[in-house]
Length: 573
Ligand code: F1P
View (cartoon, rainbow, N blue to C red):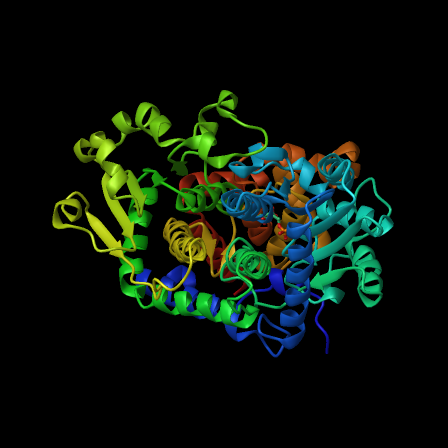
């Protein structure tokens, strides 16, 4: 029987007990889940499927044609949230490579909400197909040929749907590509506000274009996420691996045609990195314990990185507020060189406030002197450059180094814990592919750190992120699903509990009831604990006020939910 729930929104049975696992146990479960990126899931077409490999090879040829004749051509990568951040990181890396070969930049990125969304989640634009189209048109003005890749892990983002639809209407100029991780029939079929199509309808049109040789759908299945719906994890990793496979092959055939390069070998090299990273499961577990300790005691986690590993840190940090209802202070990332290094389109955004101050010198001036012994600084392969960060040695914070090289003893002594990963990266592997391997290894470790630390903080019940921010349409529906499932209510009642929590009322007004979802999201985005309150109220069938009191008395959300479930059980007896 075919399923109705998107695979990217399904529970992964491997991690059902992640909330009661030991720290090493958490990492072991993540390792087993990540294995599905390469091994596939329940017989679905996966990364190594011939169809996937064939399509990627064709795309590499298309990309190579554009690189060789840049006049009037470009490659646009686009997405929301993590998908947009990965679009940015990929475009940046491959433009850098072109620059080194004396070529002009041809890659552009689009992220819903603009560059601010590189560090903070920007809600409304993710759900707006018209904004997506406007940004795409601006980016491609004057171009004659555009290879467009729209990334939406869940096959769901209206921002991307609008762009794909626009490309489909202008196939003389655009080759549209959809990258996501569900079978096409599970693409979102819910109405998009202020638009006349669903995502599924756009996918059907793209399928027709693909049959005519004018588009591509790349949708290997990598299995459900370890934390339900957390597409930053496996889907994000697979996005990175796939994009790098296409453009590495394209650059290789353009600049080093004598060196044979094939997509499958490329994937296997990432699988080897995966295997090596998780050989260190015990040590990563120790790091998770340190990070969990910090968050549980009110401390913060800071990532300090020098090159693109700093970008991995910033990306991981930016995902914590929407996923775990974390504050923007809980996890932050800094990169040497700040905006100068980033080379983002909108330039220096630091005037937008402290969360947009992203360089290591900003860290030194804004944060270093106020660090406490509860705070944790994780340095990302930065031993040499840390000489300049003298203040860190004197600070009371906990210091951890993630390194991929042997460190001299005098460096080792400066850290409370060193996670030293040995990766199978031989000298034969050319720069900058070596860097991609370091990036994915860093991503796996940091995803484990923040996922594990938030699990330890009680932000996850079973494997469900119960304190997510209701900050886009997909997350609104996910929240309703969580309340429906754990609260054992109907969808309609679950939605009522959610709305009552959003508007802090026991009696919704007709205006509130009839407001579009975008309006609910606007009100919800600015608040904390919306879903936990609604969920506890649904489990207990209580008022919103009572549920809020219970959560005040039991601030660890997992414990509050457990208590609510237990008292519901005793009432039923
Ligand atoms: C886009 C996204 C995610 C984010 C959150 C909200 O998802 O912004 O990156 O973590 O889940 O949605 P998608 O369009 O790639 O499915």
